Length: 198
Image (cartoon, rainbow, N blue to C red):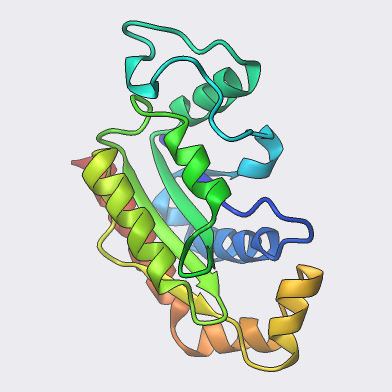
C-alpha cells in the first residue's frame, strides 16, 4: 500500500496549522475506499535550522552524504513516502520560510512523486500555494495535483483565534464545509491517487 505524508508546514508556536492539518486528514479519511495510508508529518518535529549542510542536496546520495542528523532524519522520512499533501500557511504573500527551507533541504527525494497543496490564511493563502506549486513542479520535478485548495479563515474572532491562539474556530470549519472545500480536498487527493496509479 502506498504511503502519503500529510505535511504540516508551519513551525511557529502557537500554530493553527496543526488543527488545519487534522481537519484535512479527517476529510481524507472520510473516503476509506481510496486505500492509501496517510500519515501526519510535521516539519516542526525535525527542528531544521536554515540549511547548514556542506553539500548541495542534489549531490546526495550519488556523490556526497548528509553530515547532520537532522538532515538524515528528514531525508529518511520523506524518502519513505510515495506521495504528499502539503498543508501550508501564507506569510507576507508567500509560503513560510520553514516550508521553503524544508523543501530545499532535499532534492533527489522529491522528483516524480505526486503532491497536493492545501494552503490557509486570512485570505486563503493563494500566493503561498502558487509559489510552492511552482517550486515543486518546476524545480523539484514533482507531479503537482491540478486542484489547489485555498482555505480562508472566517472573519472576526476566528482570525484572532487562529493567529494568536493556534485554534481553528467553529465558524471557519462550518464556512469551509459550506464552501465545498471538503470536496476540493478529496478531488486533489484523488488526483494524487491517480498519479500513483499511472
